[in-house]
Amino acid sequence: MKRILLINTMIFLVLCFCGVVWGQKSFVVMGKSEQTEAVQNPTMEMAIKDGLTRAIEEVVGGMVAPQDMKKRQEILSQEFYQKADTFILSYTIVDKTPLPTGYQVSLEVVVDTKGIEGRLTALGLRENREEGPRLREVRVVVSGIKSYQTYLTVEQLLSGDAEVQAFSLSEIAPTLFTWKVMMKGETGRLANRLLSYDFGGLKAKVVVSDPEQLEVVLSR
Image 1: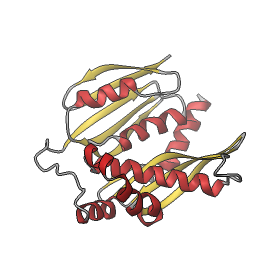
Image 2: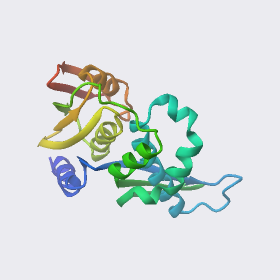
Image 3: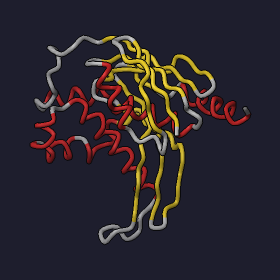
């Protein structure tokens, strides 16, 4: 019981930073800096920079058509990945982990999605989704969440999904969490992503999947 209370307390502490609002996106990413032939002295700052770059890559990947991602890697690198700080509104270090040959860091990052969208549009790289499915609200209920890391993993999956436009945590109960998710596309596609996602040894089972609600149980 004490462990559950501790997990819920930690989630409440970061709740104001998690989720998505229009014009910006907040999620957790991992960054690494390890010793290689090119990098002789990895630092924590390098790991942080790697995490920020990964955050930008996730947002750009959700806005650009797959064929353009392959063809325009150089321009995307120059305009976004090499200038990651330009589109980072803020970040918080969630966890630091020393590695045998470097560092790993977990970051809560807020990205300027409006700025990225505007730049992509100016470059002619913004994927046109006007004719796609309309935005709708889906309740995503996940039970079996017994650790803070599992909670963060679900948030990371939602934030990295191209069809998810916004989400927020609406209900918390012991081991059961409910998100309100604004999304396009079919609920079944998101269900398949949850089924195939790595939850650190936990298996996902979909018990409800309809246009308004998705319920998933995590267990060993």
